[in-house]
Length: 603
Image 1 (cartoon, rainbow, N blue to C red):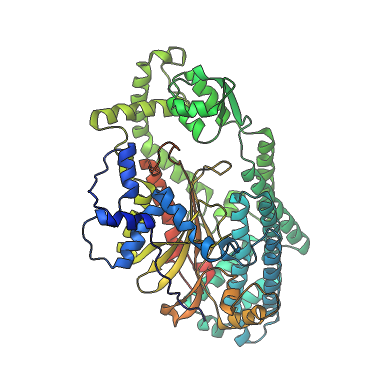
Image 2: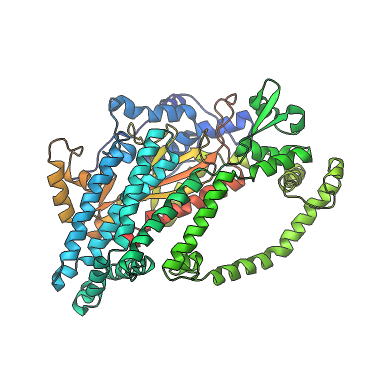
């Protein structure tokens, strides 16, 4: 049985030392070294008295500190290495994923489980048997997603090339099998047969009925009614679309990865950044990422901005060929499936339903926003006309490479009329925002974010923080992995990934897992652990204390780390970055709060 562990709360030694000292209250009003350091080191001892339980206060304070204080994070994250002797727990605590070869084992074991379910469903004859179809196919879908979703994420974010390759192979194996299943007429026939029997339909819950309808739509979109030859062509074409699409995303890069520029051309840009990029008198400016964005906002020379802009938005020819192939294969796939276009095929079960509805919405949105956009552009153009350097840069037009620069000029002038330019960010250290999100969730939904020490090998980078989502009444209900800081080779695009959805683990699955976990060489200590591959699970008091797999989520952002010279200063977020973090966390809330016994309707 899974039992809650009674662990002593982690205690920061610097907090204990600070408690022994008398401290004075600080009000952070700027992102100067002193103000930012105060934001990082302020603790509950500096805060007004609270009636919140001490344990909640401790979690709340620790949540802020692990994001804002490098020393606190170092001490916090080293605890498991000390207590567990460095033994690899596997990515996300998936016991198969302690080494690259484990992805093949994970996919292989899962594939065997899938094949047993398919054989059982195809053999069902009686009404009692067919009552199981919706739940069985939902479990089949969950097993496929366990491998596909996790592998797709790992191959995109993991820094180890061997792990990337292993995850890609596991993804390809399960994705191809999924396409075969989607064109397996027997499964579609059994689902329709079960749905058409009044006794079976009446026995299904509302969720089971919804799952049945979802899966029947999926079969219809997968050319299930075509000939065997065309179904085989559909599988091959769908595999190619997925493969080329992934290659296109993975190889999105500018044709020129670097621009070689004289430092004099970068006047206006932060000298510290320019110095870091300078080698032998020449600046090598990356055309993608933070340096390029900074250049577009701050470089005074319009010709240099134009060069940066064009390089940033000029794709490699090889990837353009991939895009052309992808569009062609998508069109062929849609035509084979009986749709007018790939857009029609994709939108058929979405809220918009048709490409015409999407176009109509976008046109209406553009029309409604056009007056405000024109007003803002006119304001920027007035600033440009007053700029002597713009004389040779289409002085009466606002070019694409001008927008960010003159927007920064406008914002700077507005800030200078009010307060110091950095005053807003000083209130938004990353830890403060995460703490604020947790408090907001607790007030709205009775859930909060609790820092949890990750096991060795559990995360793909040492900067990744694990947060457990805890409900006031139900206990542990979800896991979030936060990869929020920039680093070399990491995608700059913020994203949310659901690696595992909520789902009830049935008793027969636990019995099946018990046989596996008892075998010699099994990586699992218990049946409950084996039933969920080692990932987090917990009992659900809302469902008779049944065992549920917990939603497992990853949040990706690209927030800048404080300069090495700013010891003690936390990462301070711009208002736009705060908005981005709230947006991505909103996606996570769907998975966290949408906990259901069936995978297809969770989140």
